[in-house]
Image (tube, rainbow, N blue to C red; front, side):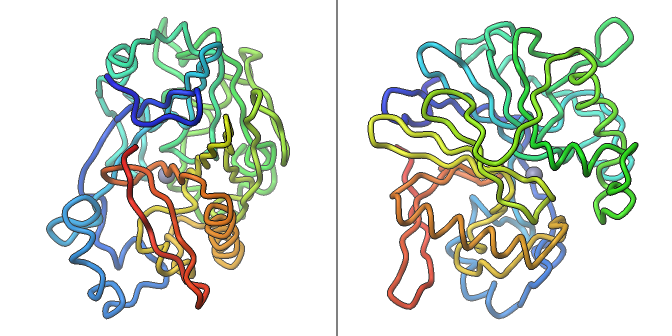
Length: 297
Ligand SMILES: [Zn+2]
C-alpha cells in the first residue's frame, strides 16, 4: 500500500474499514434543506452520494513519522454488539490485514489518538481475545479527550444527559474501559502534545470533548478532524450539523473555526468519513463562504 499523502517527512496511510450508503441526506443533516442539497448533488456523485444515500467510509489514518507510528481513530471494530446502530455491529472486516498491507503489525503502533469516543472512532482499540476485550495495540499509549471520557463513561453523571447515549450503547465498556484498565490510556486536555509537531485541540460540539489533531512538518500542515465534517456539503453550509452532534450551536461554531484555521494555514483537512480522495483543502471566498478543493497528493 502506498502512502495516501505526506506531511513534510511524515507519511500518512489510509486504513479503510468499511464503505457504503449510510443514510438519506435528510436523515443525516439536522438542518437539511432540499433545494440547497439538490443544487450541489451533481458534484457529490459518486464519491459522496449514491442512489439517494450519503455515501461514507469508516477509515483510520496512520501517521509514520519515521520514528513513531500513530493511528488516528479506530473505526467500529469487529464482533461488537451495537444495539443502538446495528449497521456497525458484529462487523468482520480485514482491518488488521489493511494495517499489514501498509507495512505495519499491531505491535508496531506507538500511539493511538481518538478524536472522540463515538462508536465509529474507538472500535479497533480492542479486540476479543481470551474471552475478553483486550488492547489491539499492546505497545501503544492511547490518547482520549478528557472531556469525552467524562461524558461517555456511563458511571458519570453527564452520560444520562447525552442525546447519543443510546447510539453509543456498550461502546465505552468494550472499547475504552479495557484500555483504561490496562493502564494504556492518557486523558488529554486542549493543546496536548501527542508527538513533536502534533498537538490536539478541542473543537467541542459534536461531542463535549471532540478534538482535532494538528500535524506540522517542514511547513506542511494537516488537520485530522474526526467528525467536525461528515460531508463536503458542510464546507458549503457550515451551519448544517449531523443529527449526531450533541450541541448544535457549539458544533457549528467549531466547524467554522476549523474552516477558518484550515484556509488561513493552507492545511489539509483529513476527515474520518469522506469519500475519495478522502482529504481536502478549503478556500475562503471574499463573502466569507468556503469552497472545497480536493487533491489526492
Ligand atoms: Zn464518526
